[in-house]
Image (cartoon, rainbow, N blue to C red; front, side, top):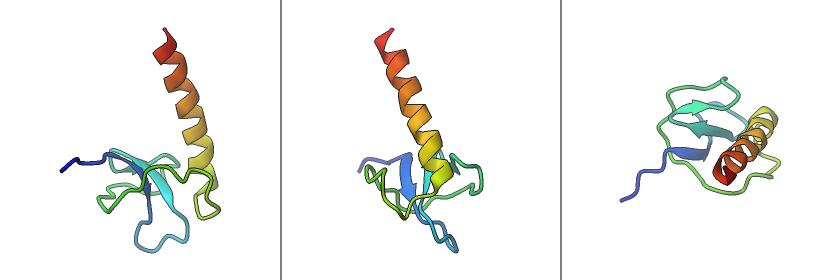
Length: 68
C-alpha cells in the first residue's frame, strides 16, 4: 500500500478542504492531520482559498527546479 503524504483533506470541524504536506496544511491553520488525502481536484469550490494560492506557487517552484 502506498502512503500518500500530500493532498486535499477535510479535518474534523473544517468547512473547507485543506492541502496537507507531511500532516501540515499549506495555510498553516491545521496541523497533525493524518486522515485520508485526495490527489487532484485542485480547483474545487470546497477548497481553502489560501491553500489553493500556496499550492499554485508551490507547483510553479517545483516546475522551475525540475527544469534546471
